[in-house]
Length: 78
Image (cartoon, rainbow, N blue to C red; front, side, top):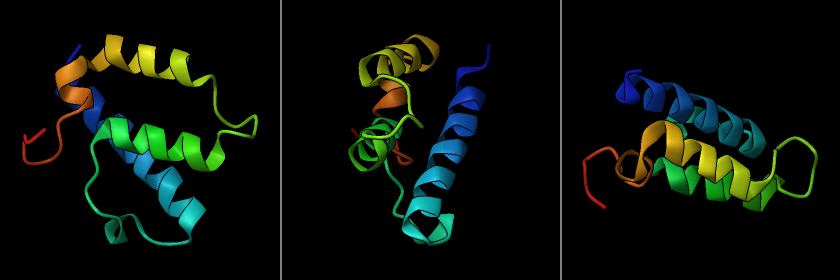
């Protein structure tokens, strides 16, 4: 599996969900780390049944992407 491609697809899905919640376009959002996107969505939507469990979701992303990809932003800075 190509982890970089997986990260791009996961990022696109998370950014779209956040933009929909905020009523803006994806391009209006700042570039966030994938891990930060997950935390933000759980903060905003975690009380509904739309999302799975936080720890299970983060664990799955860590296994799919790796710690480095999950927590590195667009410029490679941590």
